[in-house]
Length: 271
Image (cartoon, rainbow, N blue to C red):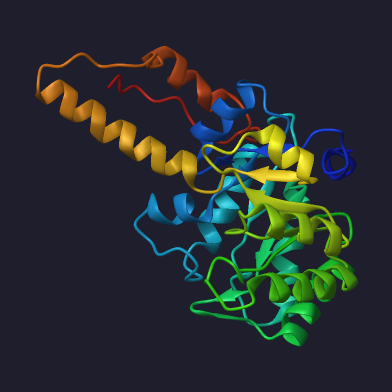
């Protein structure tokens, strides 16, 4: 089962490296590159159609993406921001719908703009979702470090324990990067720790600290934007285009993977 496979990846000898896709093509390309699971980036899913991240604006885009990438043969986890709803039952409905599509995990964050959700309310949200869809790996994200709050480590540990006690399967602490903070979170969270990849910090070092999951977050989406602009400028300046650019045929073929039967029709444009 996909659910069991995804859960097991958080308890392996090496951390789960989780690249994050923003559309069907990026998800297929990452799966074909050999990653054992993929996630989604809420920033990429929102920015691509011109919508704000963390603004409850991309519920339908998130569902649409999930429909096209759950047939890739590897577990998929989806970032649902804060759940796209106030009521815990409506968030649970969304997670149940995602699970029905084959999604193995979700990220559920406690950031609310420039503040954190109240602990009792967020704990209840986690509990309601897990009661409704116990098989889904719920990665509870806390934004204590992300928001630069005082005593971020203590806040993150408090919330990790509360969310884990409510049924969360893992804790995601974006912004945590100092070795002492990561050590404390690994030791005290009570559930597998997820942090963002850190350019310049070897994966093996984070593995040695006990990190269970390393998310790429929006890094790949942002890198793709830079690559697109860099390539456009290189052509305009009569400079060579660097890198191994996929062919038209290779990219066109990506539509054949992951989509559910009957979805999509072949196109005719070749540019």
